[in-house]
Amino acid sequence: MSKSKSKGAKKAAKKKESKKAVKGDPKLSQKDAKAIAKGKDKEPKVVKAKVESSASSAAAHAAPNVYDTPVDVEPVAKKLRPDEPISSVLQVRRGFVLADFDPASTPGFDEGRKEGEEALGAYAAEIGEWQERLWAETKGGGQRSLLIVLQGLDSAGKGGIVRHVMSTCDPAGIKATAFKAPTEEERAHDFLWRVRKALPGPGQIGVFDRSHYEDVLITKVRKLVPAAEVTKRYAIINAFEREVIESGTQIVKVFMYISRDEQKARLMERLERPDKRYKYTPGDTDNRAFWDDYMKAFQTMLTRTSTIAAPWYVIPANNKWYARYAVQQLLLEKLREMSPDWPVPDCDIEAEKARLAQS
Image (tube, rainbow, N blue to C red; front, top):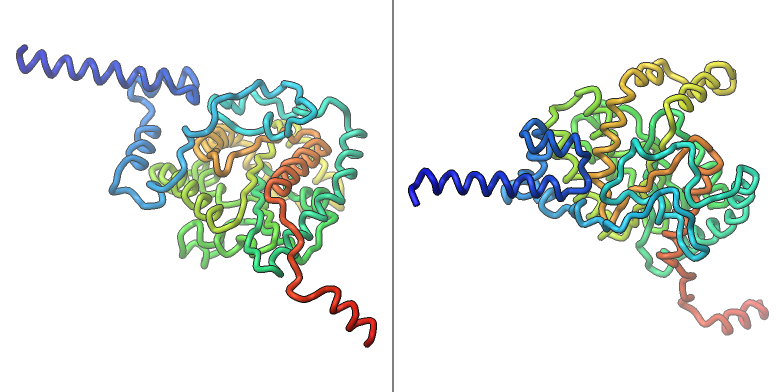
């Protein structure tokens, strides 16, 4: 065989293999798959190069791969069995398409608002007890903690989660952080610097209202940093979360998804009600002009950073009562899994009872 034929055969084989890989990736839409096949979409190639290259950062190399996420996904609208956790219909897996998700739906809950609010109240005491156990565990040397990441557009209901889901928790065991635009000091460091400072300590439940994911959302949509830098951050975030989990902090990541019309109604309510106006800023309306860009950025965020260790859960949030109930159930699932226990006393209880009785 001539050299020219040999080169042609290799090129054809490489092209065929490339098409096969694209076709076999169930995470890509048909449109995106065609774009990649034609070489028009450069971003996935950059990601692959970053992750595979031994010269890339250690963080990217150590990151759990999103492609390891289980593929046995069921339709979101399926009914749960009595013994099945709500996370099974909310978890982002391969093939997830945000545009196919109905923000007004209530996956895993067939009843209405009244029943949902009653269920929220029924489980409130259990949340409080698990939180107290986690906090008490540190008295016996425990180092574990839990972090809840709440991400979503303005008025999605992130701020109400602490008030309605964690109302029975001891404030001493809660560390809530609302991330705003970075300060001058924060901009002088890498984008994870301020996030590391806000992580919960031993025994605490941390709540992030927005998070490090803003650095792959607004920075991408508003083009505040180069596209290549945003692409690199997905792997860095995966590695960071893996590091956090290995240090003893479990992570529950929640994307609260509302429709464009629902957001408009909530923002209008803020303007019409004097007691809500403090929550509104003109930037809330400005951001609506970038709605489609944000949806694309959310889709990329969800598929590239939903890992086995720290999966994303998408919660339809048009119904506030359902969103609160769903977050509560996800939190309960994780706390039950962690199963913190009361510490063993380092003294003889019976002897102390006798001493106390005689005092």
